[in-house]
Image (cartoon, rainbow, N blue to C red; front, top):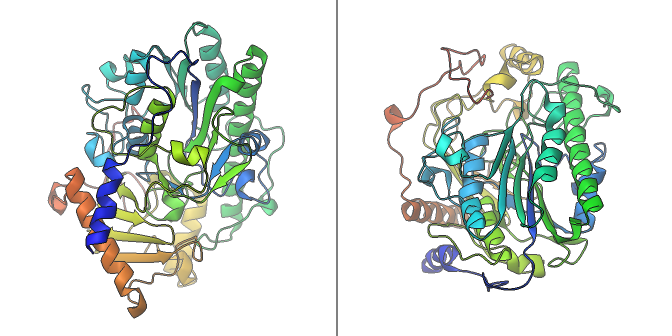
Length: 473
């Protein structure tokens, strides 16, 4: 077990060789991060989806690198985004719960880019960055009207057009697609319910198929918006000198996905385009985490690593897809409408989950629960007609621990925690989790000190009026 602890310790000490010094005469690359809202990693053409068309994201993958084992540090929107922007785990950002905003003193990696001469832009969804003094640290800020998601691309193009052309830029392009509500705006080529692929843990009902088709439509719009920005950069002649990332903040907004610290809640599409660094069409199986983004982008920009970063630079992988930088990735699930405290450890072949509240059901997110597809699932469950593989969001008590072998069980439906032959791997991952939590100061405070439910765990109906400044579940 000493080797396990040493491997974990190496996570916080390894720093890749620097790409360029801060005073290097080499032209600094622009940096553009496209982040979707509630996009499942499977629903991208480059990841093999048989139905959804994402030609622009696919082009970036064909000319960049596709990460096949990239995991977020949280399965909920604002904690995940805060983790990305800080390079720290959610419990260290001061905003571990949904709708919490980071404190004004928080260190964001865009601050360091700004100090190094970058023009920084936060455009689209603002979540976790709503503290006025945090938002004000971006050079340019413009936010989406949630009732008009189709206008997202106009904001992105406006931001890029108005920027000073004598500075490199960083833009956090934060879409609200494919977040609910659906059926907003016009879609040139809408998907039909008969086309959708229903995962095994979701009920194959007309209601579910309609919601999935609507979800597909918004993924297509996200891809189209990316394409329009790529065309703008091509016209400017700046595309080749722009590092571009495409990712999501958490899994799809359906039962057993978003807010779960399993594969479908945490795994993100992660595509990086940067012709000067990456051999086109690369694919990596190497494990990577959202906390690794900050140190990577600082290093690419030739900026000194910020104090407090908890990730590892991905630069070795960008240059060599077979390189490995970490053995473990970690994630959290804290309050997101419902009281929660879960942690997970991810390895190349396993996902381990510990739940401190196993006596409670682990439902879907509130807005999903108020939709026809979920209500149909609930009705079937109450009638005893729902297959066991689809019951997970209703059952209680739950397992306190879960172990899934991936990619054999990519949907995390076969819990191996009690199998004798898995005893050694479970003990290893328990120890790794404990050491990691101690290393970042994360400890279970007790159920009474956790933020309480604001919606009913069975129906999703709100129990009291919430602060809707951040609009959505």
